[in-house]
Structures are given as C-alpha cells and as structure tokens.
Image (cartoon, rainbow, N blue to C red):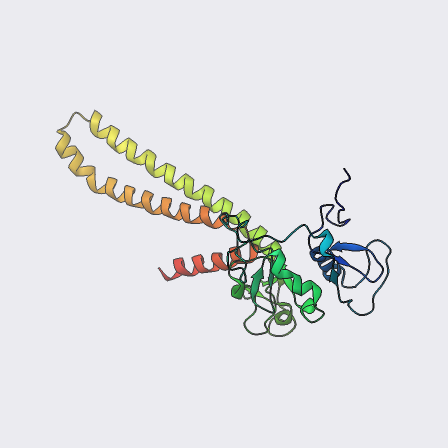
Length: 265
C-alpha cells in the first residue's frame, strides 16, 4: 500500500492542499506562510515567480481533513482559542489587522485571499490589543530605552526618533537577567532574617531566665522579622511568576506594571 502524498514544505500529509499555476501542490498554510516570510509569490520547487498572488484552489481529494467539533481537544494552559471556532480549537496565528486569533482552518482565508494576504500575521498572543500601538495600529516590536516603553516601527521614526531603541527580544533578555539577580538577593534577605529569628529563639531557650519574660522582650523583634520575611516571600513569588512569562512583549508590559505598583506603594 503506497504512502499518502506529502507536502514538501512541512513533510507531512496534506492539509487543505493548494495547487499553484505551475502545477505543484502544497498545504495552503505552508505555501501561505512561505510567501508571507519571503515577501514574494514563488514556487519553492521550480522557482516559478507569480507577479500577482494566484487564486489558490484546494484539491479535496488530498485533503487530510479539517478538525471537527468532535475532534476538538481541551485547550492546554497558556493556549489561545480561535476567535471563530464554535467549539474552540487552538489558535496558531494572530492577525494585527483583524485583531483576532485563528486556528489553521480559519486562518486559510488569509492565505487564499490577496487582500487578507497583506495582513500582518504574528505568533499567537493572548491579549492581542496590547500587542498593537494605539497611536499607529502597528505591532509593538521595539523598546525605547530613553522613555522605558514599548513602541512600533512608526513610533521609532516619529515620536521616538533619535532615542535609544532596541528590539523587544533584546530588552526582555536584559530584564530577565536582572530579574534573576533580584530574586537571588531576595532569597538571601529571606534567609538572613530566618537565621536571625532562629538565633533569637535559641538565645531565649539558653538564657536561663524566665521564659515568659525573655519571650516578651523579643516578641516584637520576632514579629517584625516575620512580617519582613512574609513580604519578601510574597515579592519573590511575584517575580518568579513574572519570570515565567513566555511572550517577550507581555513580559515587558508586566514588568512595567509591577514596577509602577511598587513605586506607588
């Protein structure tokens, strides 16, 4: 029995196979992404170039089948649901023009249509509105170190022109290193206070004085140290959760929020 035909881009069975004018066939999502990334409509195999985006037709005889409502699996933690699925499937891309996230099936129009094909697709994000510049409607993909804020490419050429600007990824990497050292210092401070509490309690036990009187003299100091320990542990947990944020843009936005809260306290 012969193996089913496979897409030469993903090397897997066809999903919504689309035939190009040159005759070669690929998954609709694969060829759509290939054209989007390369910025030109060209066949990956024969290198045939298409000046205008071809109307892609799918060959249903090779179709591996779109996910059905019955086939929908529960979303895992951190996964984003498709905005169009009645029974939510996992979204794989977000569109900054539509401000929506799509599963492979509902993403197909963005690969099939010339108009939708011009939309900017990004890796799927939870809070899509927070990924877009409110002033220019463009993707927030840069960080202005002068103003300590996330900006878009248009911002870099206008309001933030001449400022110290780096990519979101580089700024997030720098922040994560600093965050790691802040957590180390917090853990050291917690350990120092725990040792102080233990020493005070031990000195009370070994003093030979009236335990109640000795305890009364140190009770306030122990209470103060335990309050500091609780506050430091809470701060450490907050930073630990922050460090686990996978999306770099969301991580920087959360950092700014946390820093603002501590400044106002």
